[in-house]
Image (cartoon, rainbow, N blue to C red; front, side, top):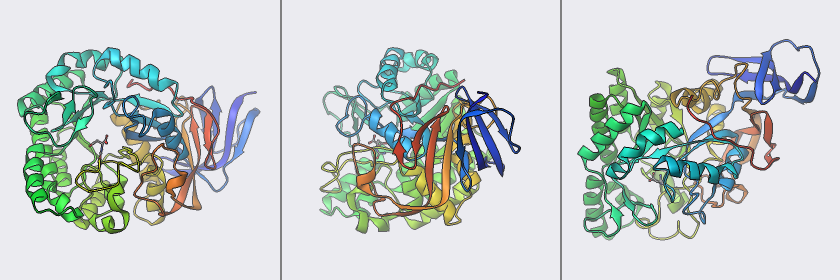
Length: 463
Ligand code: NCD
C-alpha cells in the first residue's frame, strides 16, 4: 500500500488559506496534501466531506499535577482530556514534585509522563532563583520548551507547591526572589536563547491590598478582585519588559488578564522588543459578572476581570499582541473549590474546553477558523521552536490534525470531562463547532468524542 491513511474531501485550514484537498499520511508524517486524488491505494480512507482539517492544535499551558498532586489530576487524564478536546500536543508545566528544575529531574519526569501520554508533549523547565540558576544550561540541553518563572510566588521546600500568600518568616519555604534575583535568572535564560515565561502579578502589592480587603470581612468577588487588581499584573509586566530590554531575554507573558497588561505588552512590541504574550478562554469568555452564576469554580490567578479588560483582550487577538491562546489547565478537586473565596485554590480544568470555546467564537463571528489555526497551532509551534515538525500542514511534518465539524453543536457538561477533576466554569455552555477527530502522528486518538487508543504520545523538543 502506498499510503497509510487518506483523508479525502475535507477543507484544509491554515493561517493563510482555506481550501478543499485530500490528505495523505505515511509513517506518521504528512506525505502529501493534494487537490487532486493521487495514485496508489490507502490502508484506510476517511471521508471528511463537510469537515475542516486544521494543523494539530497545541495547548502550551497545562498543569497536570503529575507528580505531586495526582489526587487532583494526572498526565493520563489530562492528555486524555486534551485528545477529547482536539488537542494533539500539550506543553506541560514544571511545578510538580519533584519540579523540572534540573536535567536529572527532566529525565525522571520524561519517564513518568511518557507512559501516560495520549498526545504529544513538550516540557517546561522551572526557574527557582539561586536554587537552580546553575542548572538552567543543562536543563536547556535536556530539551525544555522554555523556562517558567512564578514571579512573586514562594515555593514549599518539602513538596514544591506554590505559595500564593507568602509572609516573611514562614518556615520551610523558598521565598520569592527579589528583583535582582529575577534579573540574574533572565540573564541566565537569555544565554540559552529560550523563552522566559512569567506569571505576572506583583506579590507585594497583592499582599498589602489583600490584607486590607480581608479586614473588611467581605469575601465577594469584587472585594477579592480589589485585593488582586490589574495593577499587579501591569507592574510585573513592566518590570519584566524593563529587564528583558537590558538582558535581551525573550520574554513571554503568561495568561494576560487585563487591559493595562495588554497595553504595556503592545507598546514594548511596537518598540521592537521580543516580547510575546498569551491569553486564555476564561479571560475571553468570562467577566466578574459571571461569578454570580458560576461561583468559586471560576477562581483562577490572575483573576478574571471586567468587561473592558475582556474587550481589550479581544482587540489584542485582532491586532496580534497575543500570539497564542492556551488553557492554563489547573485542576483542583470539587471539595477544594468549595468554601470561602479567599481560601479556595485558584485554577480549573481547561484543556478539553479550549478548542470548543474557540470554535464557538468562530461560529459567533468573533474570529476566523484561520486565526484559530494560527493562535492554537502555527504560532505556538514557531514561537517555541517545534515548527515545522508541529503546527504545519507541509509534507514531512508530523501527521497531527484536528478535524472539526463547524455545524455540530454540543453542551459542555462537567460530568463528561475526561480530567480527574470536573471543575469547570463552562458547565452548560452551548457550543457550535466541535473537534470530531484528533490525529497524533497518524494515529487517530479521538473520533466523535471517543478515545480510541491508549497512550501514544512522545516528547517534542525544540529543534
Ligand atoms: C495555577 C495552578 O494551580 O497550578 N493556578 C492558576 O490559577 N493559574 C498556578 C498559577 O499560575 O497561579
